[in-house]
Image (cartoon, rainbow, N blue to C red):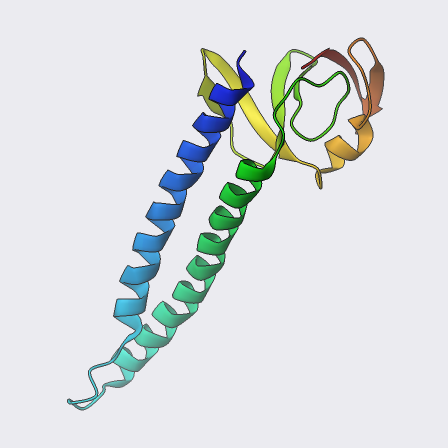
Length: 147
């Protein structure tokens, strides 16, 4: 698999998620504003407070996606011989790209999941090479491929 295509797919997915999060954020921010020219009902005040809390949570989501995009642009996706940032690995039949955490996505007909260097599984497999075995959370795993 071409890791540059995987990178571009991940960037595209993160950009879409960022745009969606921004739209939701702006919707909630708009709902959080009260019209001060009219008397404010208790229900309106409560709804505005809830919308304000949600907009803060969505603001965090916006920043998370923006940070992932920035990280994806910095990572070296060149060839790797051991598990490290930028490596595409096949671990017990499943493909993972060591970059940023993602949900499963499809690229070039393969299901892939992004994992970050902060993930518990990465801590266990960092530096491993194809053919090495490990036990993680009671399961025996094999690093089948590293690229």
